Image 1 (tube, rainbow, N blue to C red):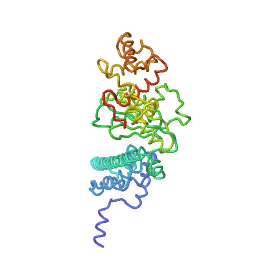
Image 2: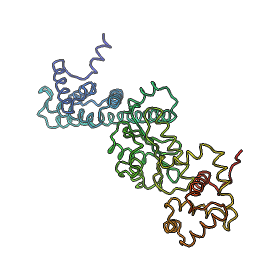
Image 3: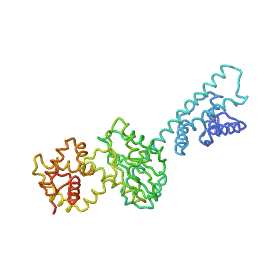
Image 4: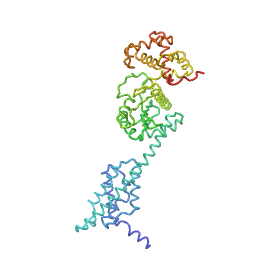
Length: 413
């Protein structure tokens, strides 16, 4: 009995009648903080009252309990500002409504009580904030891990659909919708991708909302998964307004960053469902690879614009044979085949207009005409003749896709 009485004497000196008063203080502080649960105060109010009465400082174990409450607030999704407001409002209300039995006309006694109370407030709020920050860091790390694992499984496209739907729901993803994937490739490896992810999230969430959007990294690339218009997106005009273009939206934001420039963005076509996400991702990856092989300087590359290369490369032996049969004679030209291939490529892209071709590759119109004649002489195919143009153009596209003549043609088998 003696030990039990000793422990009771160490507890805050708060009479039973005053406990109801502390309940009222807690309820008022909860209202001030926008309805933050009173339970997050724990034993904070008795600590304040005890400090006002006896001047006792909080013990380490009592502060550890406050830190745990800060962690709990973070896990419940309550903002740090509201939790701190709860504690400050509780201290203000307690001091204002301190019972008459605690009040004193002695100025020094009042000053000592105020100092003790402020010390408790200082220690408790600092400890609360520390616990909150630790919990938030843990939550962010856990969410990043879950986000990374989810994006990997979505882009792979071979995971269990039911499990993925359940895992995607907390991130606001509806896998039944039409989505598209865009990849951003920096000019060099970024030492820290957090700034780029934060910048992209800010602008994309502002434009598209935070549902059905994921921003992550994979294999050194920034990945954006975003909703797309389900009403036949492939028939949308190719020259859409920049504000509605995911690729332009991303590039406009990333080019403002001090590192990673110049960026190149590849956008896969929109597809419905889980497997459509993986398909759009593969298209975007292929577009980046093809853009590098074709030396495409455009900052935004759309997979839909490179479909012809996918068609050509689908029958690899056939395209190798076409390039060899039609264009290999160009290697006998002075300077090799590359200048003639470059001229043909520009000539076809400009719709067969020699003056525009000359401007694009920075040579004279006479030089363009001379090179086209050399192609005709060496290959037997006349670029100006509509009957020959399709064969030549298909061969040139195939050469670009195979990175010929810079690389030797693979064996056709």
